[in-house]
Length: 478
Ligand code: UDX
Image (cartoon, rainbow, N blue to C red; front, side, top):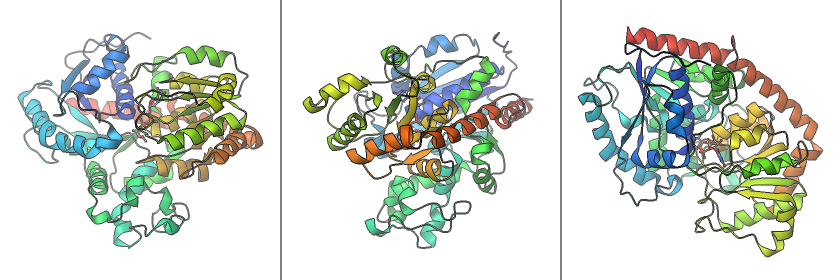
């Protein structure tokens, strides 16, 4: 496809994702889609994320084809040596953003550092505190980009009501299976254990993480519009509920699939914060179709050695072949040094392939992969849906607990392993999804993949909504 000619009079949009792989990755896809539509894009990341991104990926070359695209960096206010592990340092990262990055960002916006002709800002819904709503110093419309799905967003938006009704706090382990009956659109579905992990706080009214996240979600409904990486056939009814709070919603996902449509070919994601090990693709080429379970827990999950061992035994005992992406920081205290336990060496050698970071989209679309054992991160969920692969979900944090409940009980695309982590369950679920109930799951996965594909193709809901977004940005710039 020929690259569009961007004029200096074209609309100019600033994008600023939260500094996490799952957010940067998908926001870069949105940036590429905007650039392909002749929108000028300024992409702001933290210095730390930008360093990692440019070290491990070819992202600069990829965007160099858009002369009007610019990367800009900003400090997160933390020392260079700070580990910035999202799951461990979230309060520290947020506090530093609030006290340091937010005023700096405001100054840079006002001084015209990012350009004096910005048409709108597209801010990450998770970091929607970055600007004050109604700040008159820069009169630029603000759109919120929601990288979570609608189901988890709606569950989070319902938390204040759940607290008011006395349904939260959860009073102990024995309450975990209690059904929450007052979340509109989720009747008889959500149990306490399916709420985002931070809802397990003992004192929700005074829990800083819970309060912060819920307030970010409520705040993001007050922006000029909400862009959300989902599609109507998947989450239409839940989107209708969110529209009662924020009527202007552009559902334009799955974004990676929409990008492939606009480019007229499948692209490889280059937006990685870790070095990609492509050797697993050759390994997959030598496996039978549908015979491999792909295992990855995304970019922020952290587990203990006990869980690692339960998964490992379960995978080997399942008798299926497995490809496992073990991110360097996945296991607490291991610093990427994972040794194959002696009793698992033979089974791993015969049936396994281990990498640090996989080319996930390519892996999921490989015919050898029959299913995905995932943490239910939203990007992973959508990537698997597009590839038509059933899932086994072991959710870790944030939106993932809600995603996995919808996946198993509403969309029927797999099994939810939530809160269980033992080798018997792992082996059983792998065999249930890949052998015993294979036909049933493959059928629903194929149906959902076809709906996803329809939504991003010309005339589909996400395709049309993206056109509306571009049109509305153009109108704003006139
Ligand atoms: C986090 C939250 O967990 C998620 O729920 C939220 O929606 C976004 O932020 P993360 O842990 O990064 O996300 O998971 P996910 O959303 O699934 O994103 C991970 C991304 O990394 C995916 O795009 C996936 O393709 C990519 N990835 C993952 C790889 O390319 N290789 C790997 O080995 C693992």
